[in-house]
Length: 164
Image (cartoon, rainbow, N blue to C red; front, side, top):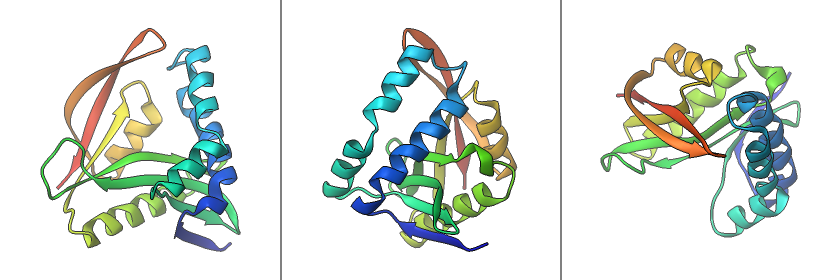
């Protein structure tokens, strides 16, 4: 079993779109209303990922035996101090949950942020995403703030997990 972590390129757009689709449908079924969820997934097809790459964006990808298994988008924190990093998106294919691959991707994401001078880390998770919240707590995150967002006409609570 070969595990590879690499920054995505335009060539990864198809794989990222499929991974995003499968992970979102699994993570948010029953949380985000069905029609809204499918619209959000449809917007993030290969063309969206290609445009993201062409504009200088990238994702940290985890591949298992050459197959995309997970990804994280990360960078400077959007709402905190200058030395704060943020993982904006963190998704793993459902069939790899509980295998340690999420821990591996998270640890590498955190290392790359620290290497970039971003010591503190912030991750937002929907409060109803029990598996996501459980994972971030298991990784040592502290729930320090709450917020809300409205998706598909439904008010959803979110939690900010922080690592110092």
